[in-house]
Length: 302
View 1 (spheres, helix red, strand yellow):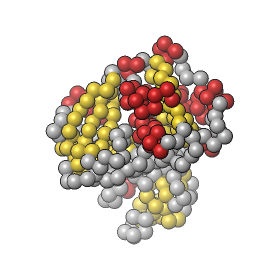
View 2: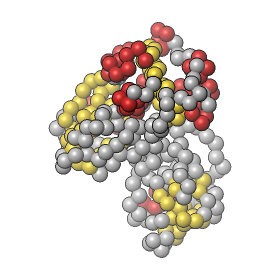
View 3: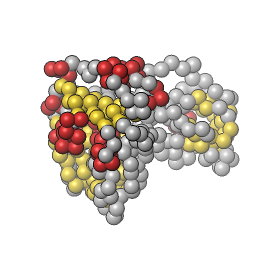
View 4: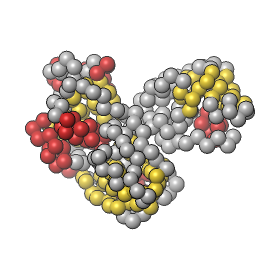
């Protein structure tokens, strides 16, 4: 974890604030567009937020937080109690949503989904790469960074207050898509599903803040062998692999517990995991907060 000092809390839009975090011990770890960090809050909760500042600024990180009406305690604490001057611990950046090289980009943002896309837009504009942004929200008052995106990209930004203009016509954008254009989309689940329905899968990259509902076989018990420590643990049907590992004393980090952040990644040496995450775990890895086993036994590098 990196030690930071909360330098500023700034209102951005209705129910949205930005947090500017200054490194307390010198420059902060580098990051690239699409990255996020875990922010350890004073109420003992850890939450993930996309970095939405400038990667060239090694002195500060910027994140934006929307106050969720059904908050599980994170956004409510940020909006009601967090004040400038507070020391906060922040993880090293992780990037599960990297901006890949392309001759052209189309960015699709819904509400707070603008946060990972704003640095991508800045990078594309700075590199002179053709790009456009479709930014939708319920109303202009609820959409953060409006002036920033306008100043960055001018007439390449299409801003839609859906309460007035309706939802973006993604089918029209898909029909006009250049042959090598990559599409990056972040926003509410209906927007992501609409994008997945009309854009070619190989050229569409999405980031979800919540996992999609999917069906799996009923949870079954299995064993996990920890290769380095030599112990074997039983994972019952009603407990996650992550909890079993942590209860046994293995310091596996965790944050979202929903398979969307990647903080709990572990290495699998043998056996067949049942991947239930939203990230698409790389070969030989798994996220034990949600994933389980298809084989009776897993061997992990712990």
